[in-house]
Image 1 (cartoon, rainbow, N blue to C red):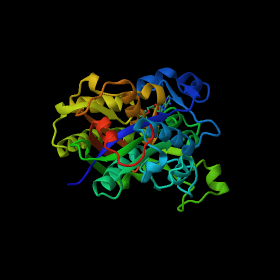
Image 2 (image 1 turned 90 degrees about the horizontal axis):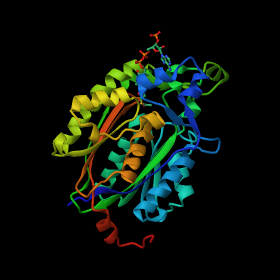
Image 3 (image 1 turned 90 degrees about the vertical axis):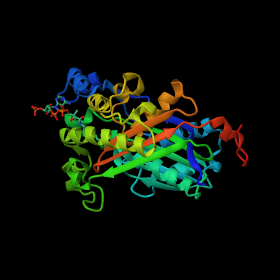
Image 4 (image 1 turned 30 degrees about the vertical axis):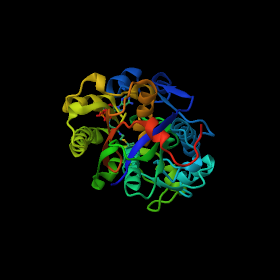
Length: 343
Ligand code: ACO
């Protein structure tokens, strides 16, 4: 029988600096009222000069390892979801591996924009189900503020920085990642892009002068696709898990815009009490948005073994993804570990 992949640890990290709507009113032609009514966002976090993606990911990962009761050396594999890596080379996952001292882990990056965490969760769970890995650290981090044009009101009010991580562990329990759904529409690449800095348009004085290293986006185009993709992939993930929507205890959606969340909620006929929402405090933190909301919920909300969580996201690419996770009996997994563990 194949093992299942259960979440046994989680953690998140947010930079201290807050950029409020009122701060943005002084920077671009916008208003607190426009941002709140169109997006639900009130403030977002901005990384300090020494807070790179790998620094924030490492902090979130340490919390996740502590929560799981594991040492960094117990991890087999690190998958780092990010669209804003420290460098093009080496991968941010490798930097996290070194900073953690995860000497027994392979490490790689996965870039799927805002769906990155769920794509990484899907890959990680399959490493575990195939028996290739027993403990995988899935970490997501973004320093989107470094790629924002703070003169472009159509993007700079939306995005924020942060990091979050989960530990996935092999278990014989009928729990863990029950299903994942991944989708992409690469023909919509122009809708959300950082055009320069890659092999197609290497960095040059011209690309810098044209601001092509910043995020550019046609937000209203994404808006329409997002609602359809979130609702459809949610239904598919729940069906693949052999469940119905009424079996889902909590839904953790991508935190891009409260209007997208509400429209998805209406399409899926979900009660308010089932939704985890924090978009007002952090804005859109890219690949990190779902795991930050998940970690905040797990830190504060009641969850029991057997509860089913649905996570769903959309993002650049365009891409979309959904996953259903059944909460495992973590104490039982910790009790059965064969290798030496942290206290
Ligand atoms: N302040 C004031 N006015 C603004 C601002 C702003 N910050 N931004 C845009 N406007 C103006 C526009 O210029 C436009 O003016 P016009 O009518 O005179 O031309 C007007 O507001 C309406 O603009 P729309 O783009 O049509 O506004 P919309 O209601 O669609 O809201 C938004 C824009 C918030 C971007 C919305 O479309 C959205 O959230 N889309 C999804 C974006 C998203 O989630 N992207 C991330 C994907 S995830 C990832 O991978 C990173």
